[in-house]
Image (cartoon, rainbow, N blue to C red):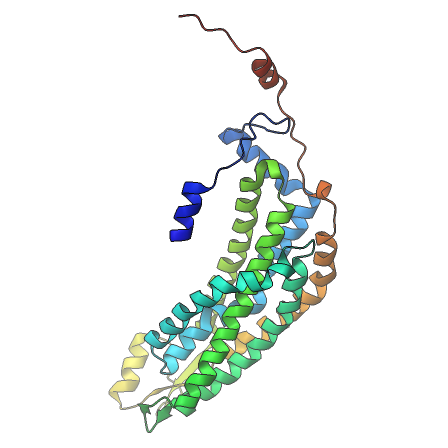
Length: 301
């Protein structure tokens, strides 16, 4: 907050309203500009990649923490780790700046992607063994060594995710038309966020559909509704998970993620070496605007 406030007070922006390339946009022109940007072939390819890039990590990002909480890890422990990671996130951009400030920021993104896909398997193993490690005779007792493993895995996951985030933002900044930088960044970030939102939503919706349960005393009772669960409990039974939807979902997500990486790897490499002309829209300054600026109206009082 302090740094942001200081920048707002002391940083002066260059006035580019008198430059030849400056174009003043109203609301209708802004939406027209957005459509022109979307029609660019390079943007369409990038948009497809952004909307599908998170499929491979959907289950890990959206469900893993919920499964850990379900297994017995407290929300407070996870919040403490996430809070501590803010310090790392403040330092990380400085460390990786030399990789993201060059002409090929997507190279870092592509290098980290396979590691994050591999981390899906790490989370599968962690969540599979967590109930056995922290539950002793039905009582949650988390050993110290588990905390070390748990914190390491979550921290590495956060670092990898943030590295990809910084790399993709650096690429957005590099390809944005300087005349309409805010519009470009808004559009590209919206596409990236949509890629996260729809994959997370689908992952959360599928988890219940892919999970199957049954009552411990009645195999015909699948505990699919609250009434069936109450019937099972009334007869001193328990609803047992027979197929865990998390594992069922993680496998296809990882496979799709690998396929995405194989398909888009060379495409993204090609995108980042394209000349700026592939990313620019052809919008010229209106003639009427030039005339008004050249011959301002005289106002008499």
